[in-house]
Length: 287
Length: 287
Image 1 (tube, each protein chain N blue to C red):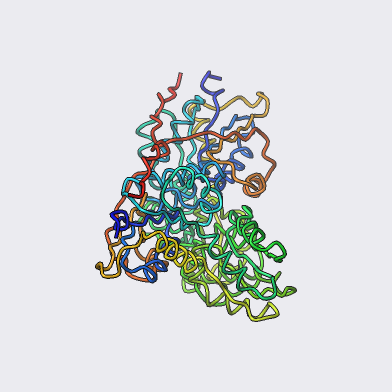
Image 2 (cartoon, rainbow over the protein chains, first blue to last red):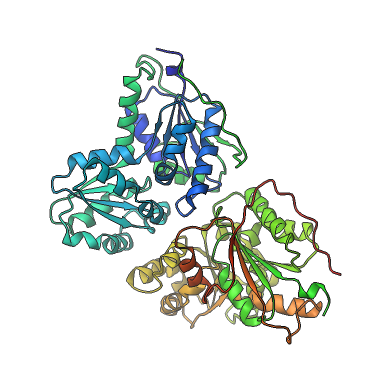
């Protein structure tokens, strides 16, 4: 195992939604040390301008770089859509987004060639999933659907029931005249609404639909890529440690965080300051 | 008219909701020059920690102070709840919040002495309305109700219909066993949902309920106070000018903004940078 392999993986999101991605990474890579950074003081990124999003993502990467991370997972759809290129230019460590892995899986999976993408208004407007899917397979028929109410529904914990079903029925109505067989949950919050979405989607689209979320696809992509480059900790190492850095710790944070994390926050939660003026630290280099 | 009377009034909100307050101020004071600052790069404030909210409010006041404003209206419930004291300490101009004026009106208005307050989770958690009402009249029976889905519903433009009614029915259910006759809309977004809220509330509480929103109450408080201190522009001055400063200008901003403003954005929209490090400028002094 190289020295770099023992370094932590950094995971960054605008808020708590990225904890669904961290959860999937722990399932897949239990021996890795993980540092999560939630930019909770500036969440949500979805309705910010592109320049602002890139600046915020660079601030976050800069902060995580001071922890000598060996890889960065951008567990935020908005930052993945707008900032992945600039992060890859600025950092010499592997940088993973949440869009490409699940887009690849969806393109492989769909038999009808019709794929729906659910996301926040910002993610859908960015066309990031649409572009990624069409780059992979130009003849796909992609149905983007902006669902701005799903994040607050998820955060409210209204994971089932008639309000949730009616909101979903309204958003998913366009699927009724399609042959969509694959639905991408293009927001890190949506996996906790999976059952409700499945219920409504199955009643609408012609074939039975399969829901794919970016958390598991991203965790698999990270595991495969770090294994190839010999950057994983050995399996005989102890179970990895987890840290949670937050730019703001609002009241009720732990409850909301654990809803998305799907487990107890098993490490220290630390408040960190992040400023727009932080220069990007020297990138970690493979040794 | 003093020199200071011709200076603009500054209006500050975390986002676009405060435009409902600006709209009411224009109705009441058409001759005033108004500068609106929306901290759209850092919206929403509601789920931030108290220290962060105070810092953001000071940043905003500092920026508006460079425009020689004669008064500051904090058209944001969260900032009114947490930052009014510190703003009044730091500025020598009159500072108005959105909580006290409508609380006073509600306490005067209610005959049963039972008042409901609807707000975001942050506003309700702050107890700001509850404290204000009980300071005014200690024997009031106050029913605070957190309604986190109403802001996204309003921003989505779902102002009526079965989803909105069901969400409201769920939030307002606690009113059914009360004698609430007065409902405070404790969030600047809620006035555009007024009809839907009235419809559901009237079916629940025993007496007919009256909805009071902070926009009109705040505009009246500003007008009365500035008139008393001879700080209003003369009525024979031309109609006032309006400027809109935004820390971020997201796609689709104008449509959302005009939904809340209730009129066309009748002045320039300018992007401004606001940073945490901006020191508070020398306060404007009455001359």
